[in-house]
Length: 185
Image (cartoon, rainbow, N blue to C red; front, side, top):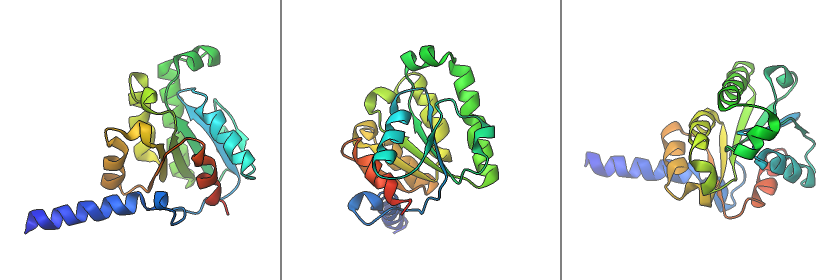
């Protein structure tokens, strides 16, 4: 009986965690102003910024956002996943990027800023340094938007259920713009 109850509870958590993907709306209301940044210096942050702009949501993008950039911000969108080329171009190291991200997340929590974590880089942004970044940002997010390709092992589904974080799984990264924009309506 106890196993049956546990199984039903787990299924309910999974259903709640991914309800937004089924077209029932967004799991949270986001507020403007919004700051978009990257953790891992991939182009996914710029992609998120572009998709939000195309969807009519005013936003500011700072690839290397710092705590001071959170003044007056109500929502922080962090596209996470590492890019070795991005690190070189931005002149950052893995250690400085992880420290910057930790500081942003701590400040957002302190200031009660909503954090929307986006993982739209797929499976290639789940290995190596990306693993550390994923494990830092995903559990600290108030909502996760994840491309199915990056969740093939069910990591985000399991994490969302355990931490009670709403999860929206998408079939294509371009879907994330409209889904994200709906939270600002």
